[in-house]
Image 1: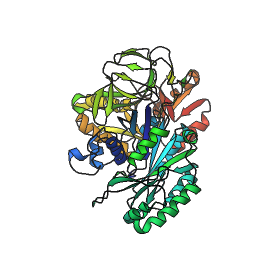
Image 2: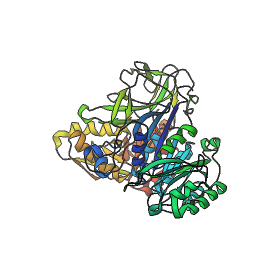
Image 3: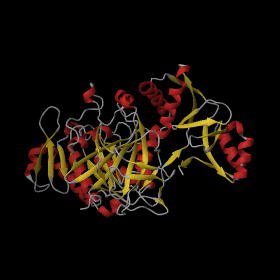
Image 4: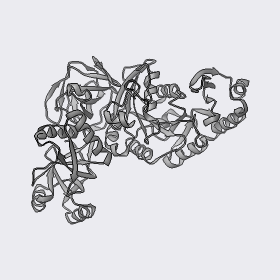
Length: 522
């Protein structure tokens, strides 16, 4: 097996509170990357989620930024990307999904498919990302397993292939039966009810089932036989084409189904896939080293004021110290201190292969959407900025800290978390975000990371669109609408509208101007 074929680069997606971050922790635990998995809501610094490193994440028990974690198990290198579940951070999640080859969709057994789950699934479908489903919290009272499977099938238009089956749910939960290997994972017998011994049975008729499950043994047999006969058998090709989802039931908190999920990813999830680019897609087998920046994160270590660009290796064998060319600028960059991420821990990456995610420390040189190449110029596509839905002016508490504020806002914009606009008339910068929670995170990070006290005040504008067109027409439009014009941090022209009505009216009136809600860096 080649080094590239031994990579599994996947994201975990879910609605908030489905247990995504807890599952991430347990995957790291089973993969040997950490030695103690902390509950997200547990108290004490050492018991907080390893993938939630921001102060606001630790305080609220939510993920608001994507995290990258690498671990190795059984000769397979797993690059796990934990994404924000909250819809206000869908931009970060979308860009993260450009860097993965598959995804694990986490569903709460009591709630089924929720709004954000469906939105994230649609993003995966747009990018042909195959999905494996983990139905979480079966140790609690939940919906009927058949109802959950049928909902996945109906709402997401996917064939479902259950790989295991819960023996009871909630108070009746006795463990998980593997429909393929006939192994039974039962609780350890302690008050916590965590996963314990795995018992090999000869099948559903084995008397061991009765001794383990007691009065619900017959129900398990009936349900498992119906599941085997009524749903699709796992077909790896259909799964990789996005037409079928393997489904595992489990409890991330109690360690049920987590190891089975890792094994299923190793066996079925695709290795690195070709990446969309111009003038041609880039195959992982190509000899030249190439990759793209899908995320930039400032101040992961506030003591060092660092800025890390996350690079997905698309082709070639990367070696520490290589010089790669930034396609957008033509600048050659020596990558002397690339790093792998192990939750909060880091390790120097001496080499990396297609599918790997490496961090490149830099001082604002690398941006989201950048393509890095060894020789031939290729520009990776599909990593856009999104037009903001909320525009605000920033009010600075201490006027002497205007320089720190400018630095902070620029850092945030370079991360792709916010948009930063400079009106052509007036001097006050305008911050644009997709969701309200992003504003709260911005204020929290300004204080925690930059020691800047700030607040927001209303902007006269509600939304913005990038504009393009014939140079003469563009110049005319900008002159006639100078009070509503701004530039983004790249100097690209932006039209700012007071409300949706004005935006729609302007679009209808100006047929020679293109208004875009997304923009990819050239």
